[in-house]
Length: 569
Ligand SMILES: O=c1[nH]cnc2c1ncn2[C@@H]1O[C@H](CO)[C@@H](O)[C@H]1O
Image 1 (cartoon, protein in one colour):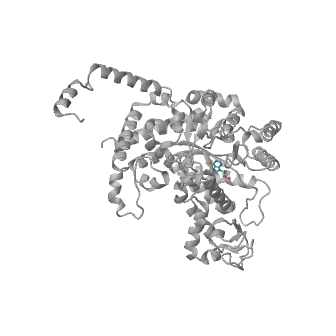
Image 2 (cartoon, helix red, strand yellow):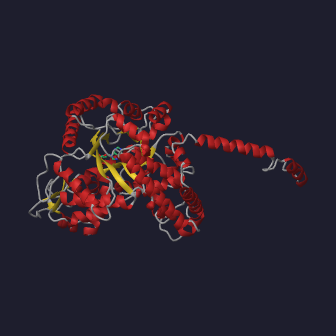
Image 3 (cartoon, rainbow, N blue to C red):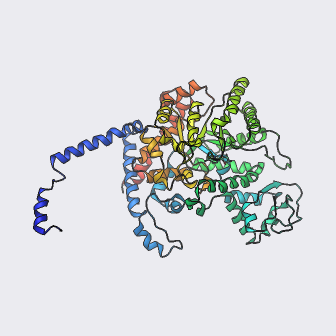
């Protein structure tokens, strides 16, 4: 029986009030509990030590975040917009990345995060860094570029799956048509001619097609129900197409310039690139590939130095590589690649920062399986007198207790200095303690994990669990030109984390950026020195401490800019 008015009047008299002393007491205890737990966070001391200006900036960003959550990320607003939009879509805070990208880029929060000094980008795969519309235009403009395919590109399935290669030739080859059944596999045809002859829309249609072969589409990105292995098949195919586009010197140079310039403009001052190229680099006007990595590494050196000498690149700290072998390969291939890594380390010591194994962890060889090769590598490094520490991918998976999940044990036992992804680490209480103890950083890539179907959106990403447990992490973009960010910078990943997780805030972002500098491998260091520098951070005396101080100055400037620019509203 529902209450009568009289009954409710009587009962409501007996209800405690929110201001009653015992409720206030309860709230006090509750706040103390929240605050006690937050002391375990990895960003606790960073928050504690914020300057007054930085505190103000954090409060301003909190306000803007809340405001935009209410005004921009609401289903109500979208109802009116939906009538005009061709794709009806419900908008809400924390929605999937690829659906929210355009709107995200129009927010005030975006404008702010874009300016943020983001320190170092510690997890990024070289081939997937520069936007492909830019690269495809370059390819079409570059004299002498030809295309060839492993079979005629004359059906939708051939267009979607066939290995396609781009090569320079001094003399134009114009015989044949790659789009028709009579194409002889492996025949090179001048690219401009082939592009113009593309059956579905000529050159513009060709550009669209090639772009689709180099990137995951929005449809791929949201089709979570097809699962992880399916998206990885498409993802691999992208790398196979991209290789031959950027392995030609004139294009590689422009690629590098665009890369560093986009990073700097995004507030990223340094990058460590996972590098897994076969020996198929071609110098300008050459038809034969190089027999070692010297020319390629020299090119990287030259382009980075040239950039640093421009006003735009002033203060850019540089680029280093983490040599990355594809984990599917058989032993002989892996050992050969390790040997190439060591040789290149000897010729270009400043460029090679570390070693890793890459490729889908679930289907590739687990670390445990590669132990003989890894121990051989260690011994060989010692014999050659070079330091090449491990920066392993591990736990980039959904498995609980699977072989991939267990890569985390091996990565830690093998002395990894950071862990790439560490997505499944949150399920390992003992390993979490070890990671904290050994001061191993987690290179977290939230958008990558979403697009590669480990989580539905940033809201269900496990990074907040790690931060709450006191694990040090940094934010990275992994493969931004393929996964949808479409630019080399990290603003999308920073923005998502800020808007997605209530307890991060600008201070949390600041701490993640500071971590990236603290765990960057700016120079070769033996394990002890590395640990000492990471531990001492700003109070140390080396290059790392110096760069941490430089970052802190930029951070303060940034906070002041926020206060000046957005404080009055
Ligand atoms: O998120 C990732 N996890 C593991 N491997 C990756 C990821 N992104 C790219 N690659 C792999 O790295 C190579 C290029 O450096 C590519 O072969 C790609 O498969």
